[in-house]
Image (tube, rainbow, N blue to C red; front, top):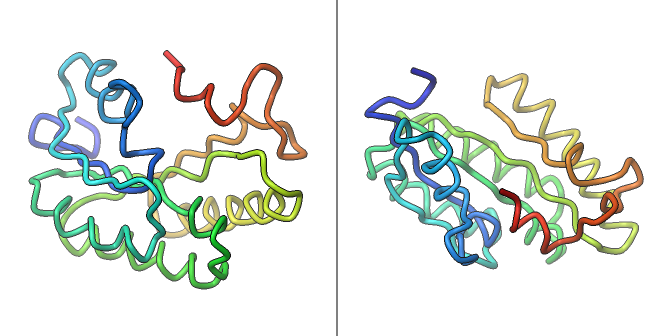
Amino acid sequence: GGIAGDRGAFSITGDSLSAGGYAGRSFAARIESRSRGRYRNAGNFAVGGTRTDQIAAQIPSAVASGARAALYAAGTNDLEQGVASATLQANLLAAWAAFRAGGVEPLDVGMFPRNSSSGLVTSRRNHELWRQYKCAALGVPHVNPWPLLANPDGTYKSGLNYDTYRDWE
């Protein structure tokens, strides 16, 4: 069932949020364990510190893995490194199209909040709104982590910070 075929084969692409260097607490490990075998990881191609232009190189491997769906979490490093919003947006559109051209359904994960300057918090929030709109318009499934993690002003909810989401169970 769902969008993933081949017993739920999926792949992971993105930056450190997806790479899973957190003692088995990667998205892939959580999806596999919580699905009780319905979904299996066909490969985690994410690399910490990468921007969307660099993550594009992960897409051919994700497509070749046999996955029917690919989790795509990206954008944090772009904004932190000063990449223009228009460039980030163009890279996201190109990535979603590349997945689909290879027969893989992208599953977009929005950027998690971060304790950054107020300008970056505003930029993240505006980018998330654009991302939600574009994903809806293009039929790309999207996960918005902000309601779970952040207050309306972009600060973390009580008891949360950049590291605590890694320990969700």
